[in-house]
Every structure is written in structure tokens, then in C-alpha cells.
Image 1: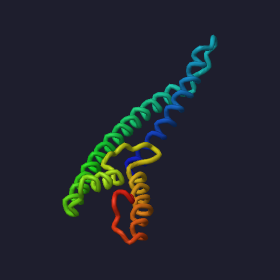
Image 2: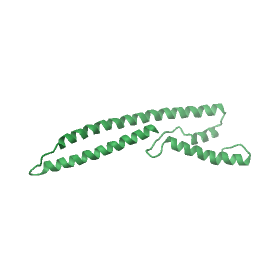
Image 3: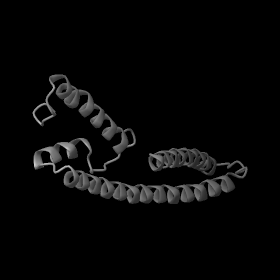
Image 4: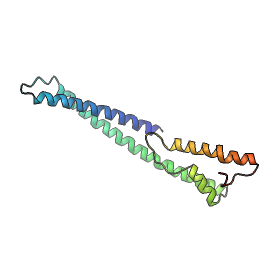
Length: 147
């Protein structure tokens, strides 16, 4: 979650600097296009500084993306290991283990709005509220048909 937030902040800052660069570039082009060019009033220094900030921010975004990919792979590996251990410890058959894997997914495909954490929390909450609650009311153990 922290990596996604950092990546979003870096992308926002990069977008702001890119917008600033475009505005400065337009002003500079307008001044140079005139027949009687007005003094640049240090616009060249401002565009150089903004350009260097853009480079630094682009590097920060790339670093944040690499860090997010690294932690995504670790999370997927840990989730697969947890699912395997649960299957072995509780002697789950293929149907039950696939049901658990559907709700505790090892697939990590984060979007800016919703990540693995939110999807998994929603899926497990749904599983606990619907499938396991129905099984408890009936007095029978939870089966895959009730889930």
C-alpha cells in the first residue's frame, strides 16, 4: 500500500512539473517568435531548472515502479506459500483449496484505485459473511456448495 501511495505521489509531482515545463516553454516560444523579442527575464534558467527536476522525478517514478514490482513478487510468493501450507495442514481437497485461492488470490495486479489488499479484504469479508454464516445457521459444516 505504501509503495502505491509513493508511486501515486511521484506521478502527481511529475505531472505538475511537466505542466510547468509546458507553460514555460510556451512563454519562451512566444517571446522568441516576436519580431521585436522582449527580454527573456530569466526564463531560460527557469526552463533549465524545471527540466532537471523532470529528470529527477522521472527517475523517482521508475524507482517507485521497480520497488512496487519487487514487493508484488514477494507478496505473490508469500501468498502462494500460505495457500500451500493451509492446504497441507488442513488436508484440503482441490475444490476447497481452489475456493480458498479464489478469495485469497496470489495474483497481484495493482491499479491506482484498488490494490491486492482491498480486493482480498473484500473477498474474505464476503466469504465470511455469506458462506460461513449460512453454514453456521444450518448447523452443518461449510461446504463448497454453500460458499
